[in-house]
Image 1 (cartoon, helix red, strand yellow):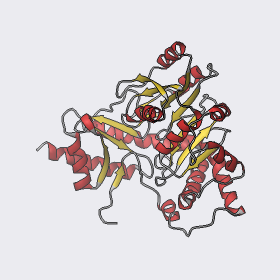
Image 2: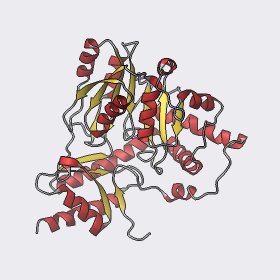
Image 3: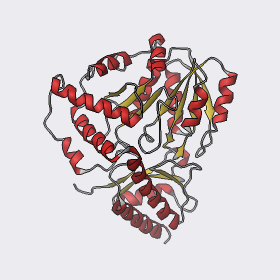
Length: 361
């Protein structure tokens, strides 16, 4: 491919050739006993990935589609929720809820910080009408990690409140015990640590959340969880699934299960540390106080971040993730989801060193 870019962004990711090639396989008809067996294996492997005994379904949608599915399935207009806003993705929970007429309480966290779980406890004690708490495992816009386990322990004590977590960037690469930690809904997507192309949104849902869904009045036709659960039970989907993506997902899940979640996570962690050590040697510091695996946010004190992003892309064919708004010239992010190994890290660091040399002239 002409001018192939090395993707050191937060998704889409670099993908191994054997998984990429499955995207070009001939299409198959999905309403057959054979395909139901394939879906049965995928559904069971997703339960392993999410560490849950509850249903895990998927939508032909991005992670944001799964976020909206979570909101519209378990809540009603004029319900009150609490959302943790530590960046653009935490903020998105609030925007989706507000669009659907849900009353919101915002717990604002400084950019790059992680929420103090005791603040969640305080707000819950002061607002007995909160139906759901929305959190983000890995706030991708800053690279900060959230202590989901501690928040889950707090929410377990509230029978009338469910816990909803965005694990789009954190699933697999961060520990997350859906059932043990009392998380009622977890959403994710295909283009981060799952390391297949974009287009699949995932959602696990607990018995408690299903009870909420039975009383909710915001359901949409396409995202109606009861259709998905009914089909999940028979190893099928309510609507046409993206078959090529499912071929790739099937192999990816097999690979993760064979390697083991912890080994998979440790491999990602090793590469993340190589990147951070290399950036430190170039004079940069990791921005987040509690940084997440595979997402490295960097605050530029001596350089224009937008120029770094541009030079890396245009001269060295390496894509890193820019920021927008007032952070455009101050902040960039580096991702290492997918097929990023030591060779790719070396290419990235060499390109960054040359970019800084150019900016220092």
